[in-house]
Image (cartoon, rainbow, N blue to C red; front, side):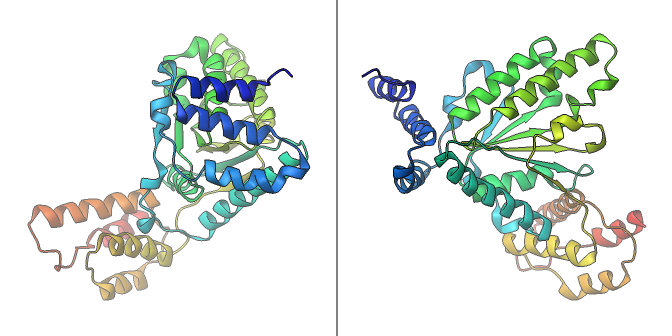
Length: 322
């Protein structure tokens, strides 16, 4: 009986003493198996194969090192991440689709776990994707199309193919940031550069059409209005990530962060500032950066940990926002 590709990959990896690659090949074999009688076995084996994080940075091919950044999601600072209702909904959706992908695979059906996040800069789209990777116990693989296109304009389509081929071989969450950089509506393409980007968009859509549930794909954009409609349809769901809706959410971000750092703060002062807040709220990124500056100033002054951290940045934010 002739051996299939999965079996050959496993044997080759073991023969070359590459247990990480063997483990990944075994996971690929489990994913590709569709026998209904082994559905329970596949589920249990997959849990064991994914039980420990993979050192993808070591497996990253040299020709992808300038395009991809691999992060160990187990180091995500979950204690200071503000899990609001929208973030919870996104995480629940990805979790639900991942389970469905396993069941569909048992029926011989490929289904993409692909989610699009959109919203203005600084609202936490990439941070949310990192949280999802943490929750799913998967490495976080990040590619910025702005950098990729600037450096590899002539071969961007081939680079995208290589990125997807690599990520489909290793369980991970692939984050496509600033996807609007390459996916503006193709009907507007007239000059050579625009036509090239149109071809890149087609390549990306083809990869999404072939995507299976072995990896999680998330994309982010600040300009959902210019993303090609045909590309948007390839994603199972779109979520708008917004600024905090009211001061209660601003307060939650601040208190969650400071509590996790083990620092004291004046609760009453925060409440008093909140009672005067009537305008729009700052972005999450701006709040966190102001918090870090305040904590850094606290440390630079040599103040003891028991001393309250200043939240003097809050009234200034209120003035700017209104």
